[in-house]
Length: 336
Length: 210
Image (cartoon, rainbow over all chains, first blue to last red; front, top):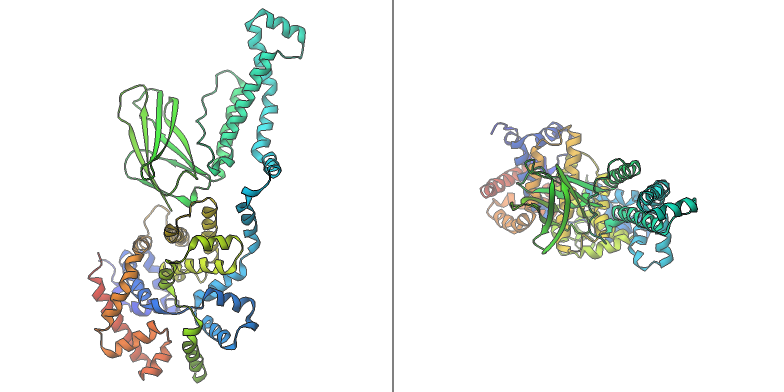
């Protein structure tokens, strides 16, 4: 033991009334001192264990005292007043009650009844959702480029299509329309998978975006837009967890998983790029989630929605699909 | 002084009828049997009593963490904990009533320690001794709850005067002045008896600590 202050001081007195000015120096000292911290904890536990049979006003009584003191019997009112005079924690709780804006809870009440909302209301919310607006912007931005690209492909394809395109002017061929529709559907689908609404856990995590085809400005812009979207999601409550190596479990606070977990695992450097599979297993609940990555190099990222991540221990196995190698196993815990 | 004493006496006399039995750590002990899922449901509907119930639970943990050594009030911290509780309840992650107390205990501790480190200008990644001690305290609350009866049995082995002082201060929640008045001990002597009693209990139970 290097510090003896806790042994030299009267800690029985300290735990009884640590707020007194003469204890100010020790209050500043003990949190940083291992020996004194241990002594203070032991004394505090003793003190609190002994105080177990003390009394505080019931919550209902405290509320009545606050909201309708005139209707309380005089003896009860007097008793609460006397108690508050020497009980800092009850004064503190009453202060919190006074400061709480109960209107803050109102939207939550609305949210809790959302299952009963009408289809029109659901549709209205979907249309007003930023993800929908963003998808529309994407569609408008890339629509001309897509159309050009599809027309060029068809131009290189069949002479008949060339003739039709030439003669049709601005009109598009039916295959072009279908291809454009497929692409825009894909864009919308990918945006939908990334949308924060997914945090409710209705869908499995989004697939990792594939690398864009080289030389296509529209697709590069598209990819940048998705990257921006991912950053935005992180800002909206997705917790990033990068596990650098297998070993001890890493704890993740469940409360920080508003949206979910963006799990990044390293692909071993000695491994040439190739297909890998990540399998996240909740052994206790017998659940698992898998995702495959076609051309993994450096690291892979997988999203796990918060609704799926109940408190418990999870293993994440990274396995090559084109070679007979043992999977690399990582562990993380979601703590309540 | 006489007036003050009679005031306190009326509190004590009226306590059994007026107050519910629960304080500090016992607040947490009493909370174990409560249906917290129902309490949260009421809180989400704007029930103020439910707010006080959750608030009191958090206060109990703050007392356990000695949070009041570092700040007079922790309203912002409590609000943050409350927000986390409500968010997790809405996300359906707090359906197990047994897990509720553990969740609130840990979230309160984590948020408190974060703020304490900031206040002490302690590097976030460096270990703070009080952080480690609170982790131990949080990890074994049930053990402590079970130790209360054992502790009071040990009190019976103390000298009679020390037993009376402990009983007055802790069991009956009386002020030092009231205990002095009832025992006839001068204040200095009463404090010495209290300290000796606590020290004896501390030494006895220190042997059981790891």
